[in-house]
Length: 147
Image (tube, rainbow, N blue to C red; front, side):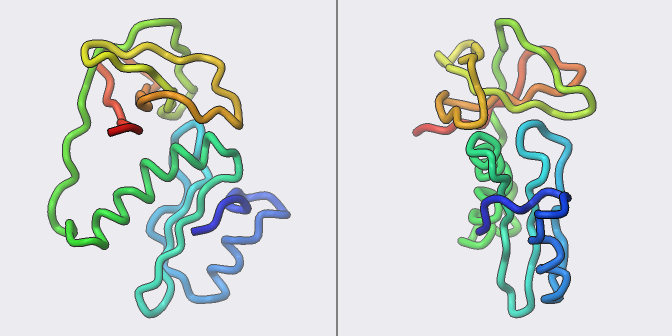
């Protein structure tokens, strides 16, 4: 797993390094905010590289949406579907991200989810992430971060 250097700028060299080592791309960025420059590649001899964004909050979201399913597959769940995400009404002031799904930290009381607010690059709070598409409506899927 690599954190940072996963974007497409001149200083972001992970992609070039993977090409030089014969990597097979599985995921090369996603339409989500935060966390779009995440990547998943397989190197020869069944070795996996997971590239997480350098922004701590974006890395957290990428770990839950990319790394967790990979680990589930590699630890015996391969071929079995991932469990369905719980869906719940989302209340509060939400702004969609143009052209992307937005992952926002929320608190969840079992009945509704509400944005925690204040999520900046180093923000690592919340009991769940709500997946808010551009044309969002409730209920929304939740990615649970705690027990």
